[in-house]
Image (cartoon, one colour):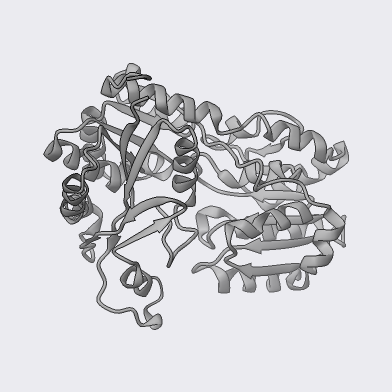
Amino acid sequence: MKKLKVLTFSTLFPSSVRPSHGIFVETRLRELMKSGQVESRVVAPVPWFPSTNPRWGDYAKFAATPAREQRNGLDVLHPRYLLLPKVGMTSAPLTLALGARRAVQKLIDEGFDFDLIDAHYYYPDGVAAALLAKWFNRPLTITARGTDLNLIPQYPLPRRMIEWAAERAAGSIGVCAALMDVLRGWGHDPAKLNTLRNGVDLQRFRPLPQADMRAELGVSGEPLLLSVGHLIERKGHHVAIEALAELAKQRPGAGLVVIGEGGERAALTALAARLGVADKVRLTGALPNTELLKWYSAADVLLLCSSREGWANVLLESMACGTPVVATDIWGTPEVVAAPEAGRLVSERTGTAFAAAIQALLASGIDRAATRRYAESFSWQATTDGQIALFKSITGVAAHA
C-alpha cells in the first residue's frame, strides 16, 4: 500500500510550551494516522518574538517554542513569522507563508516529497497555505473551523483573500455543514465542499463515577454546572454566571465551575460577587485536556453560552462522559446537540433563558448512560475515512500500489 504523504499546515497546533493550543487539529491528525494509510509532517508556525522572559506572557511562549520537536510520534516544525502590530490582520497570510517556506523546502530536501497540503483554519492559515501550494505546485485542502468563516469575512480584504484561497483549494472541509453553507452561498463549487465533523476520543472521554470525582476534585452542587473555554466574551462565561444566579433562586444548592484562563477573569469574578453567587462559582484556571474528563464526570450539566461556534469539541467531550449540555443554538451546535439525551439548545443568549433550559433538562430527568450512547455515534472513523477518500481523489493516489 502506497501511503499518502500529507503536509499538515496550521498555526493551531500544540507544542511542548503550549500543549493545549489547537489540540483539536492534532487529535484529528492522530486519528488519521491510525489508519496506516497516511504519512505526515507538520509545519506549525509561531509568531516571532525576541524574549522568553515570562513577564511577556504568551509572547514569551512563542519565543520558547522549539524550532522542531516530536509530539506523539509526529514530526513538528515551528518556523517563525512576523506578526506586525496594527497591520497584522491583513499582512499575516503573506508573512506566514514566507516564514514557513524554508521549513517546507527543508522537508522536501529531507525526502518528504508530499502529495498534498492539508491546512487548518481558513484565515490566515488557509490563505498562507494557498500561497505555499502555488509556490510548491501541490494540491491543497483547507478546513474551516468557525470564526474563520463566520466572523473574519466581515472584513473586506480578508474575505477577498479567503475567496481566492477557496478557489485555489482542491477541496474545502467544514467541521459542520453551516460552514460549508457559507462558501456555497458565495458561489463556490459545491463539488469541492465537504463536511467532515470532528469526532470524540471515546477512550479518553468516558464516564467516571460522579460521586468519586466530586470527592477527588473537592466540588459540590445540586446541580453542579460546568463551563469550559477561554475566558473571553464570546465564550459566554458571564452568561453562565448569570444563569447560575437565576437558577439559585429555585435551587439554592446550585454551583458552577469555570475552566479556562483569559482576559475576562477579573470581570467574571466581579460579576459573581455583584450577583451574590461568588461562593457558588469556582474558577480553576486552564487545565490540561487530559484532566477534563474528571470535571465532565463530576458535573450534572455542561453550559456552552457562546455567541459563535463552528463545532465545539467540549460538547462531545462532555456527552462522552455522560454529562448532557445546554448550549446556544448557533452555527454547528444544532448538528451536535440533535437529540433530547444530548441536552437542550437555547435561542436567546441570556442567563434567564439558560436557567430555564437547565430547569427543563433537570425536570425531564438525566440519563447519563443514554447521553454516553449518543456520544458514541460520533467516533472519528467516519471523518478519517472521509479525509482519506478526499485526499486520494485529489492526488490520484490509489489505495494500493
